[in-house]
Image 1 (cartoon, rainbow, N blue to C red):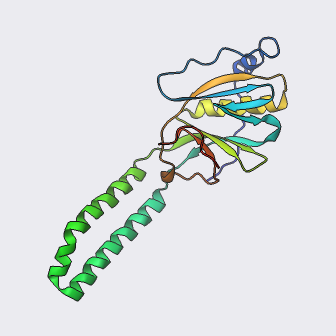
Image 2: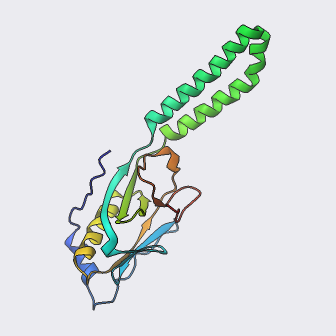
Image 3: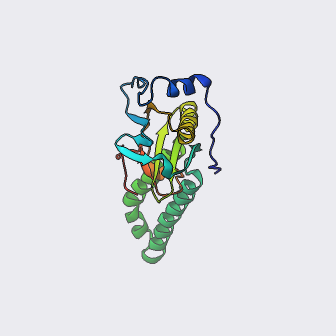
Amino acid sequence: MDRAGRTGEPGSASRSAARSGPRGSLPPPSVPSTADVVDLKISRRLLWVNGAAYPLRNIARVYAYTMRPRHKEAKARFLKQVAITLLIFFALTNLGGAASGLALVPFAVPALVFFSVKLRAVLSAPPRHVLTVETAGPSCAVVVSRSAYQLDRLVGLIVDAIENPECEFQESVEIVAINPVHYHFGDKVNIYGGRSHVGVVSA
């Protein structure tokens, strides 16, 4: 997966909004919907992601990319699980006769159904758009959203704030729930918008 940063220039209107007003003032935040949101704010040379603060001088890279589900790994794991189940079935049949093999059926069938459900969950998972902020240290923050356009624009705004000390902004991002084990994340990160742990996860 190409995780190179996409730091394309955002629209001029966005930059004007980020710089408008006297120094130290912030534009009105975006109105959040009823869905879960993460508030991103740059103020006084700090990037705030909800309650977590990242000094702009420590940010090493900021980029947006599309996170893909682990289809290949899920298929390989499913085939391995089916093979092991069938191997146990045939081994019991050869060692103890047909009766021993049939005794495994009440356990094997639910197991195969469970494996199939797990496979379907990964194959049906859609790609998700991700904003990643890496620091000079080991910590990293990720925001998962449906809107690739908004995340690309935020990359430009954050880069602009790093280069221009007077630049400040605040915006809310609607996040989506995901199961991290279904996706390629790469580095160990702090995740905003994950299933069962919406918020900060210690890295």
